[in-house]
Image (cartoon, rainbow, N blue to C red; front, top):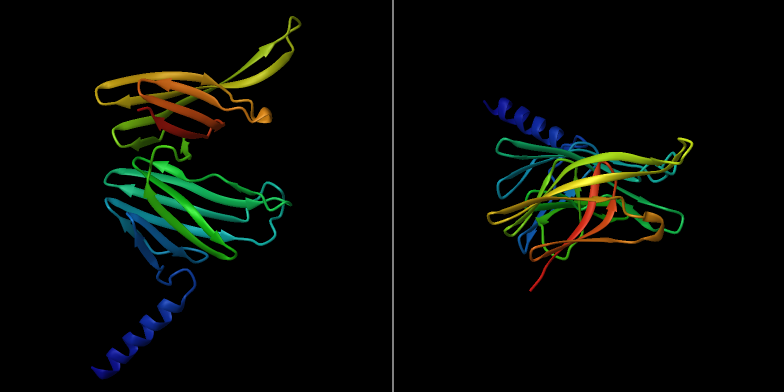
Amino acid sequence: MRIIEIKLLIFLFVFIQIPGHAQSKKDMKNNTMTISLKTGKNPISYFETLSIEPTNLFIQSKPVNNQSPHIQLALNVIEVDNKYATHLWYAADSSDKQIINYPKAFKQYAFHLKVNKSEVALVVEKLAFEKAFFIDLGQIAIIENFSLQYEQCIGEWSEDIEGNQEAAFNTYSILLSAGDAQETISFTSTDQSDKKQQTLTWKNYKILVLEDDDKSLKLMVYKKD
Protein backbone atom coordinates (compact mmCIF):
# COMPACT_ATOMS: atom_id res chain seq x y z
CA MET A 1 0.00 0.00 0.00
CA ARG A 2 2.86 2.34 0.83
CA ILE A 3 4.46 1.74 -2.58
CA ILE A 4 1.20 2.64 -4.37
CA GLU A 5 0.95 5.92 -2.42
CA ILE A 6 4.56 6.84 -3.30
CA LYS A 7 3.95 6.10 -7.00
CA LEU A 8 0.80 8.24 -6.95
CA LEU A 9 2.67 11.19 -5.43
CA ILE A 10 5.43 10.87 -8.05
CA PHE A 11 2.82 10.82 -10.84
CA LEU A 12 1.09 13.94 -9.52
CA PHE A 13 4.42 15.76 -9.16
CA VAL A 14 5.45 14.96 -12.75
CA PHE A 15 2.02 15.89 -14.12
CA ILE A 16 2.09 19.30 -12.46
CA GLN A 17 5.54 20.01 -13.94
CA ILE A 18 4.41 19.35 -17.53
CA PRO A 19 4.29 22.68 -19.50
CA GLY A 20 0.77 23.87 -20.13
CA HIS A 21 -0.68 21.85 -17.23
CA ALA A 22 0.58 23.97 -14.34
CA GLN A 23 -2.23 25.51 -12.36
CA SER A 24 -2.93 29.15 -13.26
CA LYS A 25 -2.85 31.73 -10.51
CA LYS A 26 -6.18 33.51 -10.02
CA ASP A 27 -6.84 36.85 -8.39
CA MET A 28 -10.34 38.11 -7.59
CA LYS A 29 -10.77 41.83 -6.91
CA ASN A 30 -13.79 44.10 -7.29
CA ASN A 31 -15.79 41.49 -9.19
CA THR A 32 -12.90 41.02 -11.63
CA MET A 33 -10.87 37.85 -12.12
CA THR A 34 -7.26 37.84 -13.31
CA ILE A 35 -5.86 34.49 -14.46
CA SER A 36 -2.09 34.11 -14.94
CA LEU A 37 -1.41 32.13 -18.10
CA LYS A 38 1.38 29.90 -19.34
CA THR A 39 2.21 29.02 -22.94
CA GLY A 40 0.15 26.22 -24.38
CA LYS A 41 -3.04 24.90 -22.81
CA ASN A 42 -4.20 26.30 -19.47
CA PRO A 43 -6.64 24.86 -16.91
CA ILE A 44 -10.35 25.69 -16.97
CA SER A 45 -11.42 28.56 -14.69
CA TYR A 46 -14.86 29.57 -13.44
CA PHE A 47 -16.35 33.05 -13.06
CA GLU A 48 -19.97 33.37 -11.93
CA THR A 49 -21.92 31.21 -14.45
CA LEU A 50 -19.02 30.99 -16.93
CA SER A 51 -16.64 28.15 -17.71
CA ILE A 52 -13.50 29.73 -19.18
CA GLU A 53 -11.11 27.63 -21.26
CA PRO A 54 -7.84 29.30 -22.35
CA THR A 55 -7.18 26.50 -24.87
CA ASN A 56 -3.84 27.74 -26.21
CA LEU A 57 -1.49 30.65 -25.50
CA PHE A 58 1.12 31.34 -28.19
CA ILE A 59 3.95 33.84 -27.65
CA GLN A 60 6.64 34.87 -30.13
CA SER A 61 9.11 37.68 -29.45
CA LYS A 62 9.77 38.28 -33.16
CA PRO A 63 6.69 37.73 -35.36
CA VAL A 64 7.36 36.26 -38.81
CA ASN A 65 5.63 39.20 -40.52
CA ASN A 66 3.81 42.46 -39.80
CA GLN A 67 0.42 40.73 -39.76
CA SER A 68 1.45 38.13 -37.20
CA PRO A 69 0.69 38.94 -33.52
CA HIS A 70 3.28 38.74 -30.76
CA ILE A 71 0.78 37.05 -28.46
CA GLN A 72 -2.36 35.09 -29.29
CA LEU A 73 -4.79 33.28 -27.01
CA ALA A 74 -7.43 30.84 -28.24
CA LEU A 75 -10.35 31.18 -25.84
CA ASN A 76 -13.54 29.18 -25.32
CA VAL A 77 -16.26 30.46 -22.99
CA ILE A 78 -19.26 28.35 -22.03
CA GLU A 79 -22.41 29.47 -20.21
CA VAL A 80 -24.95 26.66 -19.87
CA ASP A 81 -25.76 25.80 -23.53
CA ASN A 82 -24.07 28.86 -25.04
CA LYS A 83 -20.51 28.49 -26.29
CA TYR A 84 -18.31 31.33 -27.55
CA ALA A 85 -14.97 30.71 -29.29
CA THR A 86 -12.63 33.58 -30.13
CA HIS A 87 -8.98 34.71 -30.27
CA LEU A 88 -7.38 37.55 -28.33
CA TRP A 89 -4.18 38.90 -29.85
CA TYR A 90 -1.57 41.50 -29.04
CA ALA A 91 1.11 43.05 -31.24
CA ALA A 92 3.43 46.05 -31.09
CA ASP A 93 4.69 47.97 -34.11
CA SER A 94 8.12 49.57 -34.59
CA SER A 95 7.10 52.52 -32.40
CA ASP A 96 5.89 50.16 -29.64
CA LYS A 97 2.28 51.10 -30.32
CA GLN A 98 -0.01 48.36 -29.05
CA ILE A 99 -2.32 46.71 -31.58
CA ILE A 100 -5.05 44.64 -29.92
CA ASN A 101 -8.50 43.19 -30.66
CA TYR A 102 -9.87 43.20 -27.11
CA PRO A 103 -11.65 43.48 -24.70
CA LYS A 104 -14.01 41.03 -26.37
CA ALA A 105 -17.65 41.10 -25.28
CA PHE A 106 -19.76 38.03 -24.52
CA LYS A 107 -23.08 38.78 -22.87
CA GLN A 108 -22.38 40.73 -19.63
CA TYR A 109 -18.66 40.03 -19.70
CA ALA A 110 -15.45 41.43 -21.20
CA PHE A 111 -12.26 39.43 -21.78
CA HIS A 112 -8.86 41.01 -22.32
CA LEU A 113 -5.16 40.33 -21.92
CA LYS A 114 -2.85 41.94 -19.42
CA VAL A 115 0.65 41.88 -20.90
CA ASN A 116 3.82 42.65 -18.95
CA LYS A 117 6.86 41.68 -21.01
CA SER A 118 6.66 37.89 -21.25
CA GLU A 119 4.00 37.58 -18.53
CA VAL A 120 0.43 37.28 -19.78
CA ALA A 121 -2.83 37.17 -17.83
CA LEU A 122 -6.45 36.86 -18.87
CA VAL A 123 -8.75 39.42 -17.21
CA VAL A 124 -12.49 38.79 -16.93
CA GLU A 125 -14.83 41.57 -15.81
CA LYS A 126 -18.31 42.96 -16.31
CA LEU A 127 -19.06 45.18 -19.30
CA ALA A 128 -19.66 48.82 -18.39
CA PHE A 129 -20.83 52.04 -19.98
CA GLU A 130 -18.14 54.40 -21.31
CA LYS A 131 -15.63 51.57 -21.80
CA ALA A 132 -14.66 50.46 -25.32
CA PHE A 133 -15.13 46.82 -26.31
CA PHE A 134 -15.02 44.61 -29.40
CA ILE A 135 -18.04 42.51 -30.32
CA ASP A 136 -17.79 39.63 -32.80
CA LEU A 137 -20.38 39.02 -35.51
CA GLY A 138 -23.45 37.30 -34.05
CA GLN A 139 -22.57 38.01 -30.41
CA ILE A 140 -24.57 39.94 -27.79
CA ALA A 141 -23.19 42.51 -25.33
CA ILE A 142 -25.24 43.34 -22.22
CA ILE A 143 -24.65 46.39 -20.03
CA GLU A 144 -27.12 46.61 -17.16
CA ASN A 145 -30.57 46.56 -18.85
CA PHE A 146 -29.22 47.50 -22.29
CA SER A 147 -28.21 44.91 -24.88
CA LEU A 148 -26.62 45.12 -28.31
CA GLN A 149 -26.22 42.37 -30.90
CA TYR A 150 -23.97 42.57 -33.97
CA GLU A 151 -26.45 41.03 -36.43
CA GLN A 152 -24.92 41.24 -39.89
CA CYS A 153 -22.47 42.86 -42.28
CA ILE A 154 -23.20 43.31 -46.01
CA GLY A 155 -20.39 44.27 -48.39
CA GLU A 156 -21.33 46.85 -51.03
CA TRP A 157 -19.60 48.99 -53.64
CA SER A 158 -20.26 51.88 -56.00
CA GLU A 159 -19.46 52.08 -59.73
CA ASP A 160 -18.79 54.89 -62.16
CA ILE A 161 -20.69 55.36 -65.42
CA GLU A 162 -18.40 52.88 -67.17
CA GLY A 163 -19.01 50.15 -64.58
CA ASN A 164 -15.68 50.49 -62.81
CA GLN A 165 -15.67 50.09 -59.04
CA GLU A 166 -15.16 53.43 -57.30
CA ALA A 167 -15.46 52.56 -53.65
CA ALA A 168 -16.19 49.58 -51.45
CA PHE A 169 -17.90 49.77 -48.07
CA ASN A 170 -19.83 47.69 -45.57
CA THR A 171 -23.31 48.17 -44.19
CA TYR A 172 -23.70 46.93 -40.62
CA SER A 173 -26.85 46.05 -38.68
CA ILE A 174 -27.05 45.96 -34.89
CA LEU A 175 -30.04 45.04 -32.75
CA LEU A 176 -30.57 47.30 -29.72
CA SER A 177 -32.78 46.38 -26.77
CA ALA A 178 -33.73 48.03 -23.49
CA GLY A 179 -36.65 46.79 -21.42
CA ASP A 180 -39.52 46.04 -23.81
CA ALA A 181 -38.14 48.29 -26.56
CA GLN A 182 -36.18 46.81 -29.45
CA GLU A 183 -34.93 48.18 -32.76
CA THR A 184 -32.45 47.28 -35.50
CA ILE A 185 -30.33 50.16 -36.80
CA SER A 186 -27.85 50.21 -39.67
CA PHE A 187 -24.78 52.26 -40.55
CA THR A 188 -22.00 52.22 -43.14
CA SER A 189 -18.24 51.89 -42.73
CA THR A 190 -16.33 54.39 -40.64
CA ASP A 191 -13.56 56.29 -42.48
CA GLN A 192 -10.60 54.76 -40.66
CA SER A 193 -8.04 56.95 -42.48
CA ASP A 194 -9.54 60.13 -41.00
CA LYS A 195 -10.00 58.51 -37.56
CA LYS A 196 -13.57 59.73 -37.58
CA GLN A 197 -16.07 58.14 -35.25
CA GLN A 198 -19.70 57.53 -36.04
CA THR A 199 -22.24 58.30 -33.34
CA LEU A 200 -25.51 56.38 -33.20
CA THR A 201 -28.30 57.51 -30.88
CA TRP A 202 -31.22 55.45 -29.64
CA LYS A 203 -33.52 56.37 -26.76
CA ASN A 204 -31.28 57.24 -23.77
CA TYR A 205 -28.16 55.71 -25.29
CA LYS A 206 -25.33 56.89 -27.49
CA ILE A 207 -23.12 54.36 -29.31
CA LEU A 208 -19.74 55.36 -30.71
CA VAL A 209 -18.43 53.24 -33.60
CA LEU A 210 -14.65 53.35 -33.08
CA GLU A 211 -13.60 50.63 -35.56
CA ASP A 212 -15.43 48.27 -37.89
CA ASP A 213 -14.89 45.26 -40.12
CA ASP A 214 -16.92 42.27 -41.22
CA LYS A 215 -15.80 40.14 -38.25
CA SER A 216 -16.03 42.57 -35.32
CA LEU A 217 -17.00 46.08 -34.24
CA LYS A 218 -15.27 48.26 -31.68
CA LEU A 219 -17.92 50.22 -29.79
CA MET A 220 -18.42 52.39 -26.74
CA VAL A 221 -21.85 52.94 -25.19
CA TYR A 222 -22.94 55.99 -23.20
CA LYS A 223 -26.12 56.26 -21.15
CA LYS A 224 -27.64 59.73 -21.16
CA ASP A 225 -28.88 61.30 -17.95
